[in-house]
Length: 192
Image 1 (cartoon, one colour):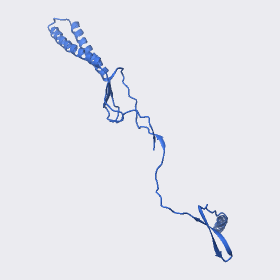
Image 2: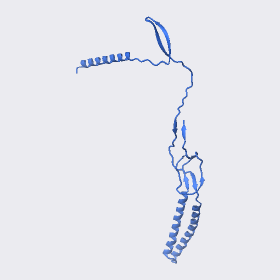
Image 3: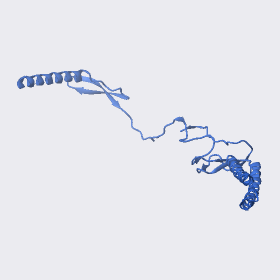
Image 4: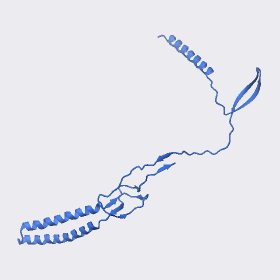
């Protein structure tokens, strides 16, 4: 297309858009809803007309910056704690709502029978170690069979395994905090 034709179309289109927008702005003016109206008569050349005036009385007042919201607070992390063994709880080492550290002992179940079994096995362990020492000395002198020596050594290893099992069961009677935080049961709704 020729440059002159393009320029003419562009100018003609601009004039049409300008005419439409002027017509729209002249015929679509809206008035605001008055809050306080006052009527006054103003003399003009064409005669007296009533003029509506929007006014508002300004008073000094306090601005409150409050928002009232109902809601429920939820923790970032939570866990239900329980013992892996049953029994009577003998210690509780926290107060509800207090802050605790990771690894802190929270509660303990009665482990008196397990402690007694552990002491009995530790005493038997010393005796079994002495037996193995004696059997080893006798085996070197060929005064005892290798089978008897191996039986005593097996008894020693069995006692050591039993002690580890009892210690593991004692550990199950203790409840430790898995992470830092506040401890307790909170089921409260708050109004802010």
